[in-house]
Image 1 (tube, helix red, strand yellow):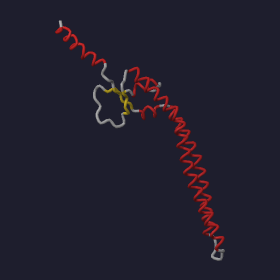
Image 2: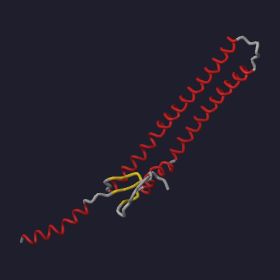
Image 3: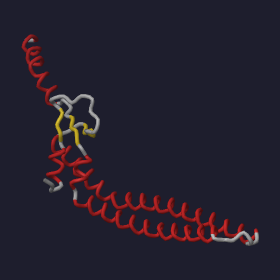
Image 4: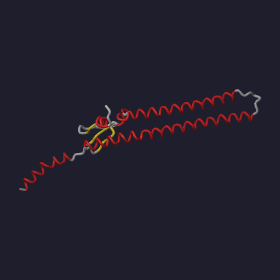
Length: 166
């Protein structure tokens, strides 16, 4: 009787272990993000904003170049106080343009993060949904796998399908 119970447990144990084995998935989120029309719209908006900043920066550069040319055009008979004031104006314009460039860069980064947040959330929700549907234990980014076994599932196509992408 004990032998029959042990035999039944020995036969059933591998089946339970196989049923409880963790499932791993990998995904290439970059390809999913690039395929989304929402991402393309965000990039277009950021490019438009960037163009506006570049135009404004060009105006500042033009103003600074004009001030430099005027300074270089001053004659030798120009009083030193006027030369110093013009030099200070040039330095102020340079600092103003550098401050503008830093502010513009920070603003573009902030805009990009804000505009991409809903897109990232959409992809995250799709990954979570596919992970639950497929009974995944873990899903890893596919960017730098050192080894991928045969039991690891690439869920990138499933996530794209979930998002309505080809």
